[in-house]
Image (cartoon, rainbow, N blue to C red; front, top):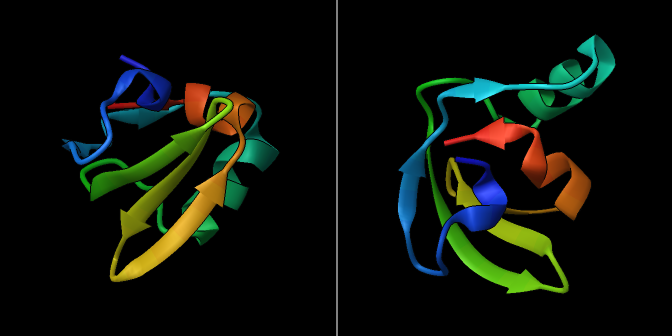
Length: 69
């Protein structure tokens, strides 16, 4: 399922990253790689804030839809 469907407080594991190669590289540079566990901290108008590797990262709904968990 896409990350946008995960519930607040849920811990999920990244299965794969979709989209164009440049989008994949951008997400990977922020730590979004398959196998990584992330926590959904909040969702606001579809935009998602996640906890990843002891950091909080905000991503757009469009980006979050490309992250399969």
